[in-house]
Image (cartoon, rainbow, N blue to C red; front, side, top):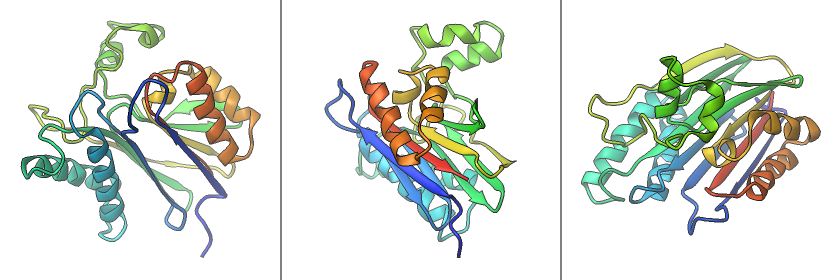
Length: 237
């Protein structure tokens, strides 16, 4: 059976300011499933939350045949239940972005501000939409997109898996066509919070090898300050 991706690279680092890495990634070469999760550093057991979310998504989307959106809802419920039962901590939360290639169609789903990008040629496009306070201001026309990077509340999430959102969570999902040569980038905000999209595009364009590209992106985030854990997956269709 042919591999869904021509190649995949991955890299993660604790960063320069944190004591532990609360990010988690999963790469399934045979099924084309890619997952990145970012445990919430300000909450208890963020590393437990990200790892558990990734495990549930793996199992639900793989063995159980659920859609990625269904898998993320199941991960949300599992985190809440685990917190109540003393595994991890009550209120633990994580972002999660996942994608899976079905032939030429890319299934995507996400909650939080971990991102999915597509690079086609030399054009980088963010396919996911941040579930953050500042993005809600942009959507409402109350904040210019250019001001997001310097806004003091840019890291405040509107929702996450496991978080105690009063109205629950709303997983966003879409399925889009791909073209041969498309490059996908999944990352935590340890990358997108340190590097502008233009710089990310430059680094991807400069390195055709996906593993070296992933490592170059993480190195650049560290050089820019490394204020958070940083995790990257780069895959070529």
